[in-house]
Length: 340
Ligand code: MG
Image 1 (cartoon, rainbow, N blue to C red):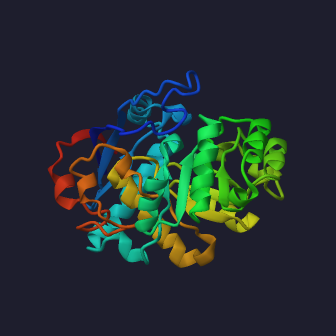
Image 2 (image 1 turned 30 degrees about the vertical axis):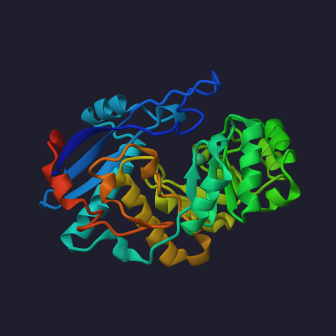
Image 3 (image 1 turned 60 degrees about the vertical axis):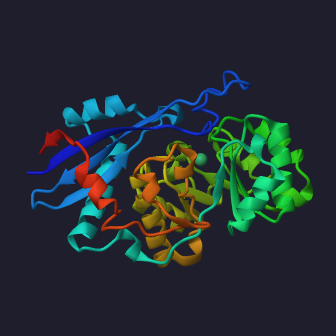
């Protein structure tokens, strides 16, 4: 009999994390930093193997709420996100059973530096990031065009590759205006733009004239079966949210690049995502671009995030097996969720 346990946690963001979570769409001048709720999941298989994962929904981005997912689970309705969490827990359990860390899958992969509030970007900060050997910056944009354009110009001027993420809050027209406000030199430094506006083929075709596009939170809106080609060049895979095997199959079919990121979630989710990025890199080589798995510093530190060590853009192996954190995870006051 498989047993499932949960541990509820809350993480405190140090900055507004994105345009939707901060309430900035309704009021662009006012940011509210709300605590982020999630649960860690512990699965004990019928054979007695133990694995851990995270469940961290973003209702602001269209996810079913945490409470609803857990209620549904009690009634044997497994949400797609819980399905992902259970798969990841199983992956962790396999590694723990073999007494290996999930990072043993490959070589460390470089990460971008995430800046959720580009309006605070100044040269001193960028130079500091550069001195830490980061070469790619990801900026969350769509709040304050003038400040964002200025930040991109500064970053491009220092030689950074720049990734932009609009979280689908714009329109093809507002995106065109945004891109037109940038210098030619800055535009050439833009590696890609995530979700410039809500997905539809015509709008994205139009937007793709101004930058390489990347598909992230609009993934479920793509009518994959109907398209012989797609208006984007990159798929962002969030293992906490997307079936990795399905997304990789799309990448291969449409000849796309892939970026693996965590879901701005718990350090357990961070290590899971980073380990999948490494495994995919080993298998698919140049198809896999720099990852985006360093979000833990956006939150107030806790006993888990203090165990995450980095060397510039690289996340280092945690101590222990699977995703690591062995003693911390064992010691948590787990609550039984279900036996099946
Ligand atoms: Mg995104």
